[in-house]
Length: 241
Ligand SMILES: O=C(O)CCC(=O)C(=O)O
Ligand SMILES: [Fe+2]
Image (cartoon, rainbow, N blue to C red):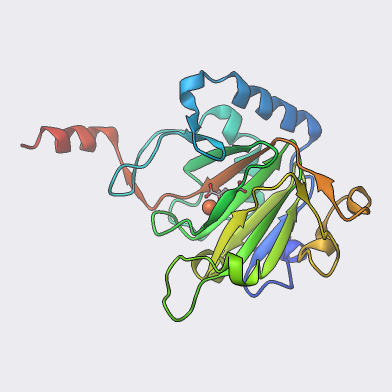
């Protein structure tokens, strides 16, 4: 990864992960949230514990993305800043081509999971509107399955994501760990010992009580889908009977 990211590295994590507070400004955050909330309702997929938008579209059954540009409001200024950081420079398309937008109300989260082989193993997450703690769990070594050891051991690492921050996870964090967000109304035990990116947190004062009540938090997760089909080719494929 590039020199601009060196100072953003979460050094207590085993492989490369980077955290940058205030990656976007308050105005940029507000503008993006307005766009997210002004899309037609069918753009949202309601899941049991959160709602989701998928841009430019969902992958098909063979994990292929139909080539289409991201909307401008997901593109700039974020993609230029990724370029400056060089964070997608080793990815096959040199830039993200896919964004998931997840919205979590207080009490909602996401089960520990891995993002799998459809993507180049790097996720760039921008958090909006409120802080959240991302939990990392080691995959069970014996079985190499995706069963989380949540009940047994709790998370191995906890990352505090402030609103407007960027978190990049890659390498073994992508392949050997599961990530999840607790279904809770309150994140607590926010201490330098428990939060692995504590020294990089932009506003430590805001967390000095060691806890906060959850508020609605939105995330943008940027990824590079490995398989991309052009529309022309897909039509040819559909007609091939
Ligand atoms: O909201 C987040 O930060 C995580 C989302 C996530 O893990 C996913 O969409 O796969
Ligand atoms: Fe994920």
